[in-house]
Amino acid sequence: MSNEDKENKSAGSEILSWVKTIVFAILIALAINNFVIVNATVPTGSMENTIMPHDRIVALRLTYYFSNPKRGDIVVFKYPDDESTLYVKRVIGLPGETVEVNDGEVYINGSDTPLDDSYIKEKAVGDFGPYQVPEGCYFMMGDNRNNSLDSRFWVNKFVKRDKILGKVYFKYFKGFEILK
Image 1 (cartoon, rainbow, N blue to C red):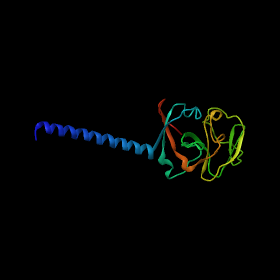
Image 2: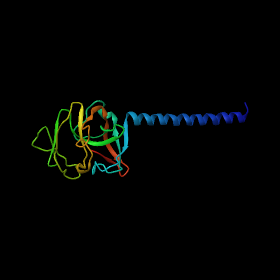
Image 3: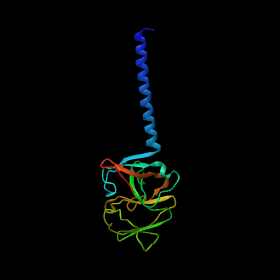
Image 4: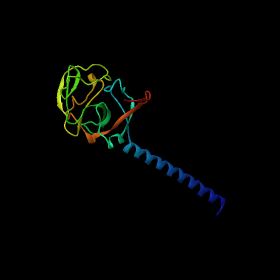
């Protein structure tokens, strides 16, 4: 074999090695994005001041493989009225509960004490409900209650458990922050 043939074979091996590496990296990235995390942009101010418009968020899909969403979790889910759209909201009502909003305050199961909603942008206006959350479903609200298209206004009021994609753990782009 001549030196030129050896160089061509060596160059071909190098190119094949790079192609294999790139394909492997793409497959790993696709697997992570489809089975481990949800990486999304929040387009509106419905979650202000927790998540600002155009912030990017990362949600972990694995969180709810072994447990259920809890009240106060911020989650990514398929919008019940158009499942091709992803929404980000806070879990307010759990399966089997009754959710009611009186004078902007959220009450669960007729409690005399409203939910602690110290995270909301401003006090909500209005009365809504009562909403009886079906088993296997959740009632969602945005943190910017006066500017949030959420369970109170949807045709299909509740998010089914299997439509929740993951729990939001942090946001980035306008600044990295771990969310509570």
